[in-house]
Length: 307
Image (cartoon, rainbow, N blue to C red):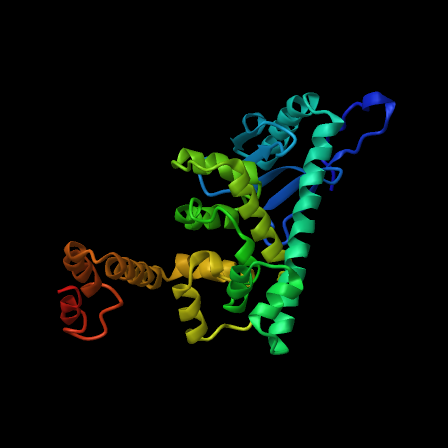
């Protein structure tokens, strides 16, 4: 399906028209493409103005050049997007479009290289190869091999996780609501106080997109066991395997008490490591009213551990 907008050819060469592609997971969300470049999004939302649009891409532009708006109808949103695109497109060069393509290709290549590395480590582990030999054979850091062996998978390579972790639920809600543009996600998080760079959010969006592409719509995943979910909730956040990130986000959204209990466990570990006796009483008070309390008197006796 094509938008009613064509641009005058630059440098006397034919230029592609804007096209929109329906999101396979949401019938009320369209991704707008200029050739093979993701130029923006038009999606329905639940608010006064039911339609929202974003126009622009990054890299290849400054984040402030990306425009976002809301409209009363889809036709109005499409017309406003077309007007915004004229302004955005007039300031773009061929190098800008190529910068976006290069970043997309580089991200895919890095992902594939990391996947091959993880697969190679796991294959050698299945063969019973010692970690020290795997380190030498693949020229990897010993800590990297250990983390993969402990179930880290592709996420052992993930960087800058901590700064974005407090906004994980917000990002998941925005993503589920049809906001799939990294720059748009970044701008919305900035309003909520996020101090990280656009690159951090763009990497999160790329990982989420790759996660969904590895599990196409309609494919039913096997429900993990309670033991596996418990293990995923107690390991380091950046060690959650890539193919379970979406599942953990859904659990956080639908079963908040489980993540409340996880945070309490983390707080208890911190208290024990740093011997913060003054923080134990507030922790006990919080834990008594949480899912951690399995029976009366099961928590308070632990106070003697810190003297």
